[in-house]
Image (cartoon, rainbow, N blue to C red):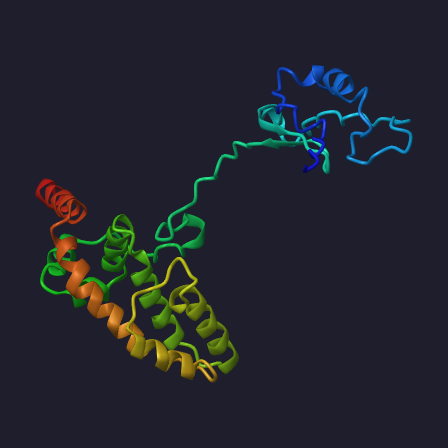
Length: 253
């Protein structure tokens, strides 16, 4: 006949709940009083445990856990490990800023320019070149691009124009690297949309950058603004309100 395997006294213990936790030491003591096993699963030589182990006290929540530490999801008890309390922390995720949203402090200030005249604003509707020709036109168009979350296109174009004016090799390298990190790198939140061919050319030329390293990219972004953003700018409330305001001032004068 097969001998029946002795059951460990703790096998018969139901998993205690948080409400019955204070009664656990007494229940275990009653079950193991006449048992030749101690609480660690080791058999005592004389059939009794000289120094029975006490179950560890429940862990107290640390101050960092706040009120989340007191909300235990379960209690577990076994013969080979101490009691562990699994807690669920309600960690609030911080709202992240969308990649296309730019902080105001990261953006260069608008160009200094006098207020546009009625003739200038009317000329903007004739061609995109006339918008980009004057600081007032660039500022108005840049303000419109900000509403469409594409202001980085204008910022990149303006940075390339500033780079072309430099003659010092050291300054050219510094500005080229800054432009690359701000508008060409895929890790930048202000990355502009360029095709792979233009990116490869820029990457090769970054070893020894010149003031014309971004000419192809600048032309591509200029074309993108001309074909995509400029028609919407002409139909925007921003342009129409500016035109109406200047027309009323001209009529009053």
